[in-house]
Length: 330
Ligand code: UT7
Image (cartoon, rainbow, N blue to C red; front, top):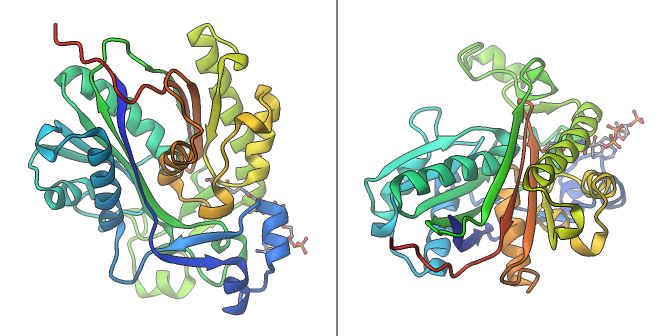
């Protein structure tokens, strides 16, 4: 299978580092830029939830592929900020797009899109039909605006791809991994079934996302490096064969450290974290769409994707950019 269409949606409202400081957060534009590379992020409007962002990206990807909703065999939404705990977000997205095909969420935090691509690729082959894979997040709703260690990092947005059957098989191999021994490294401690939401929970503010930044940083570098090396080894290729490296956009220092360890120079890396902040499961498809829009993707290019997130989870895959595949009708 291959990617036949790519779409992106960023909410209108742009929040700069200076806006956060002006709102009373004890931080500065200089600190945020130097520690993260982030200059701004987008926040959803009050009436928008994750499914609304996902629908916009999904429509754009379908239009880009020249396909309609009726052509799609399944809708997968990777998100860690669903509209509701129940039901999943994908059925809401599918309904808004006007289809009753199978629709389900993938929850692998910031690695969610790479996981969803893996699942979507398998479904595309099994169904021999297009599958819509969306990464969408409204992180602004789960961050504590008074927590300067977390709230400066995250933004909202959605990116989507349409996977279609393609005999040349230009997506893969994949490498996925998880280590759930210490979920507290990056989590929302309460609000789930272990500690349901209550007045005490809200008073303690533990329903917000919290993080041990240094531990997450070190693991992100190590895991994305290892997963990237693994897919190259599986494919029998080297980093010299990669035309563009698109990593999870969490922090430009993390991206630089991974790039340096896998041996790829800045000119072959695509960076959007400065403009989008960390959009979790949306970051990789948003970066891919941005690379395409800036003319950085050419037919036949080999692209290395990698991501890391809460769980811990991580993943990587290779893809050959081939947006107009010849369908195998045999
Ligand atoms: O998708 C995966 C999710 N998350 C990530 O990938 C994030 C991974 N972690 C990081 O990117 C970094 O750890 C951060 C950007 C979150 C923090 O950067 P750091 O260089 O690790 O800073 P630090 O946590 O060691 O803090 C250094 C200092 C502290 O002050 P003291 O104790 O040295 O006086 C913090 O209180 O910086 C302070 N600080 C801030 N100062 C101004 C922390 N956040 C801020 C802030 N503005 N926003």
